[in-house]
Length: 175
Figure 1 (cartoon, rainbow, N blue to C red):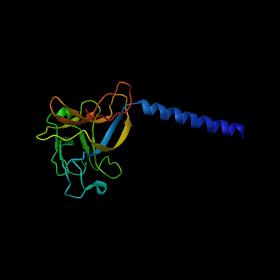
Figure 2 (figure 1 turned 60 degrees about the vertical axis):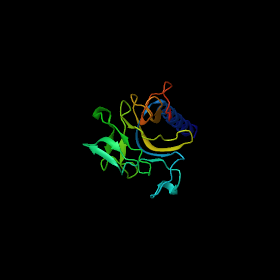
Figure 3 (figure 1 turned 180 degrees about the vertical axis):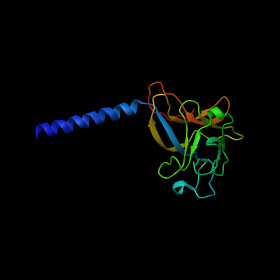
Figure 4 (figure 1 turned 90 degrees about the vertical axis):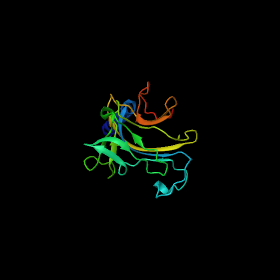
């Protein structure tokens, strides 16, 4: 009986150790982004019944401009028209449709190295009062970075990409 309990305890400790190690590894995240910025009223059908304050809604199953899987534009599904673009083909994330679904839905897959999509504004998203939801899946990779949505105050750009955290933890940041 003690041998069985010791074996089970050992297996549990090993699995906990593996889980802790995975938390320290930087992920590659495939994502669908939904951001609420408390700014513009939404006129169309919205996620989760949110009917006001939706400023940015990115869905991997709508508004994707891609060539051979490389995403050059991701159209905002809210009424705000904060569309994200990337003209440099090397930095374009990949659209994964029927081949690699997440919970039966397509994804936009950022490589964790240099993939990003940016919003170059004619009007700014108010980032001071924001709630943001990201649905993603991590793949264990040591050379990849977690997803971020950041604001570049020098160029007034909103950028969706993956960025490095010096302490190797997942981060979600808005600059």
